[in-house]
Amino acid sequence: MPNGTVQGTVTDAPTGMPIAGAMVSWNPSGRTSTTTDAAGHYTLTHVNAGSQRIMTDAPAHTFMEKRTDVPAGGTVTVDFAVNPA
Image 1 (spheres, rainbow, N blue to C red):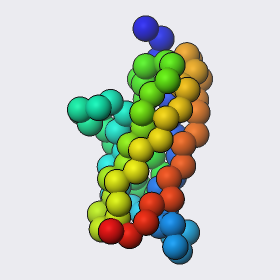
Image 2: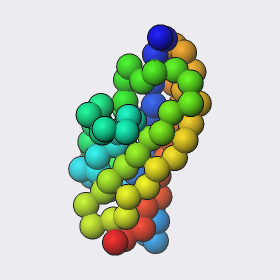
Image 3: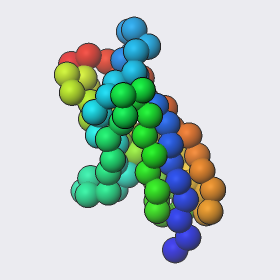
């Protein structure tokens, strides 16, 4: 199956500040994941093309999940604004 890339930013919803160290994953088991950098940015590579669930779990914040269509050979942006837990 062709792959694509998902990139984006995880921020604190009330303040808009980036969240460093948030886990972002794309499969239900969470085994394919990355963490955000100091600016809240992340990149997931080798994501199966088609409709995928992208999830984030940030320290002291609520879990969030979004669905997106990942283009084969392309890149899609999925940003998260998460609320404090």
